[in-house]
Amino acid sequence: MLYVGIIGLPNVGKSTLFNALTNNNVLSANYMFTTLEPNRGVVIINDPRLTALAEINKSKRVVPTSIEFVDIPGLVEGASKGEGLGNQFLDSIRNVDAICHVVRCFEDPNISHPYDLINPLRDLETIELELNYADLESIERRISRLEKKVTVGASSEERLEYQTIKKLKENLEDEIPIRNIILTEDEVRIIKSYNFLSQKPVLYLANVDEADLANLTTNKNYQKLLEYGLKNELKVIAISAKLESDLQTFSAEEKQLFLEEIGITQSSLDELISASYELLGLETFFSIVSDETRAWTFKKGMTARECAGLIHSDFMRGFIRAETVKFTDLVLCGSYQKCKEAGKVRLEGKDYLVQDGDILLFRFNV
Image (cartoon, rainbow, N blue to C red; front, side, top):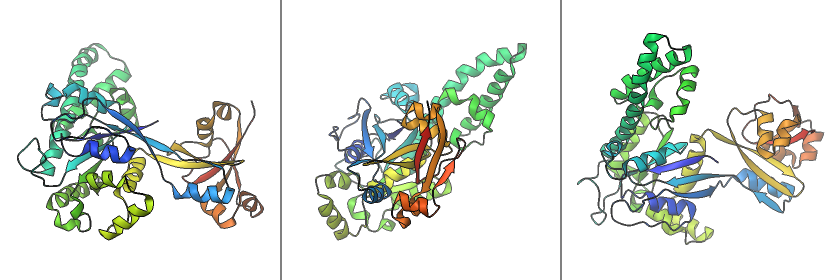
C-alpha cells in the first residue's frame, strides 16, 4: 500500500477533508492541533473501466483498487526546531509516499488562523521551508562525517554520496526543494535511504468557500495559488472541504442534483483521488477470472512478471507468459473470446511493460 499524506497549517480543513475522503469521523474543531496523531483511511478508486468490464463479464464479485490517505498533525513555523508538534509532524511526513498540501483560501472570521490574514503563498512557504530545513539538518549531520572519509580515502560510493548531498545542501540553502533539483539516476539511488521530505511529490489543494466553486475567478487567494502552481508545474485543485464533508450524508442521486444546483458538474474529491493516484506514479491493470473482475494497482514501468507477482508470488516465480488485451478492444469486441477471435489478444513475455488499462491473464507453472 502506498500513502498520501494530507498536510497543512492548523485549521486549514485537513481533518474535514480527510473525513470526506474516507467517511471516517476524525475530530475537526476550531483550535490548534486538533489532530495529535496521524489518522489513516483507505479510499476506493472509482474506475468506470472496472464497472464496464464487470458488466461485460457479468461478474458477481467486483474488486476495485485503492490508496491510503494519512491525516497528519498540523505544522507551525519552527517545526524543524521542535515548535508545535515538531518532530512528530516531520516523522509522519517521512512515512508517506506523496504529499497533498491543503492551503486555506477561504475567509471566515469564526475560524482561527495561525496568522492574522489569509495569505496562501505565505502559508505554503512556511511549510515548504520547514521541510527544507529538516532536510538540511539531516544533510549537515551526515556531511561532517563524510568529509573526514573523503580526505583520507573514501570508497567511490561514499564520494558520490558526499558530492550529491553537498549539491543538495547548496540548493536547499537557496530555498530550492530537492524535488526541483535535477539529479542523475546514480544520485537518486545514493540518497534514497535518506527519505528526504522536500523530495516527495506534492499537489496543492486550495480549500475554498462553497460559493466560490462555480466561479473561481472571484477568489483572489485561489488565483494566487493557481499562478504559483502553474509557474512551478505543480497541480492545484480547488475544493470545498466543508461541502464535500456535508455531501457524504447524501445519496448519489441527491449529491448530483445538489452539485448541479450550485453550478458544479462533479465532486472535487474524484479529481483529488485521481490526481493523488497519478502523483504516486500508479496505473491500473485488470484481471477477469470466472465470476470476478478485479483492478490491480501497479507502478508505472513494471514488467508483466512483476505485475504477476502482485497477484501471487507463485505467478511471478513460475511466469510463462501473459495473455494481454487492451480495455478499449475488449469493450469494442464485447467479450474476451471475441477479442481472441479478432486477433486482439497478444502473448507477452516477462519483460513486457504493462500499460494502464491492460487486461491480463497470467500463465505460470511451479
